[in-house]
Image (cartoon, rainbow, N blue to C red):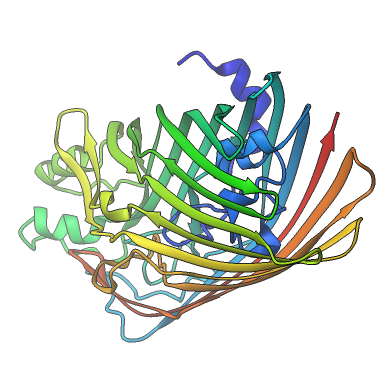
Length: 436
């Protein structure tokens, strides 16, 4: 796809950071919903960021509006060894440090009238992403060092006012994914096998890196039922998106032995060259409620289903068709539940509160150091200050209490990683909204 000019303009929108929704989903698509833990997200329709959560909500707005949000995200993932076994002919190594780290993630939205009852919107965001990065000498280095998944989503939408109560929104998602996976290659174990045990040289290792990217397409559709200003019910569906990433594999420090046959085997197994990987991002469905209880208090609720069942295997294949690596994932679909409230002390200020439960899709038996995910509970608060009828600033903070993640992952030649992850996430968000 010829999109170099577009990509240069949008380069700052790439996600950097560890996934902070369950799996590698990113729900942080605005700051105005952060304080509610995104409860009611498909029904609130407060600003143009409804393009992501339910494009039908655009019909509740008028004129032209621009929204810019920025999230500072601080995930932490610290491994504690609980009986790991070193890789064949290698030293055990350390605990890897903190695989998380602070990152900045932006979102942009624009909405405008086309004609009475019809509105256009454009959203630019990152619906999925993750990054984990360990010390290169850690115990699990032959299973994972760096895992980096980035997405960029360009989402034009149209919203139609069907009647006084019902609205429909539809959108197209042009989405790019980039991925980088690295881990240490155990040359010592490979040489021992290739030589029939005739060459035993411990502690020979190098870094294997796989990179790839692809563009693909999907869609989203939303419905909004708003019989009055006090009640809104929204439903939103975002389609699955299939990718075939194309890229390269490379290996550092490939050794040379005294055996020509072993050298030939090393050159074949650890050759640099083109690779592909098929990945399917899951579809999602959300059902949300917004109810104004009185002039000061609002109640919000949401249930969101993510079809993680599509993520069964992560396989990297050479251009010849030979497998380079294959990892069984076997993820399960999940429901995320959230509940929130708004308090309006005066016409200029709104305070927000929210809780959510986001269960992990990762079975204990398939947890890997690339995504040491576990279920998480959100506690969030935030607010909005309206400077005038044209401008508003939103802010929010959430702390995610993540259940300790146990891991017992054995890979041939790479040893056994056995232990526990201590995880948590802090998120700070700010947003500026301007209506023209």
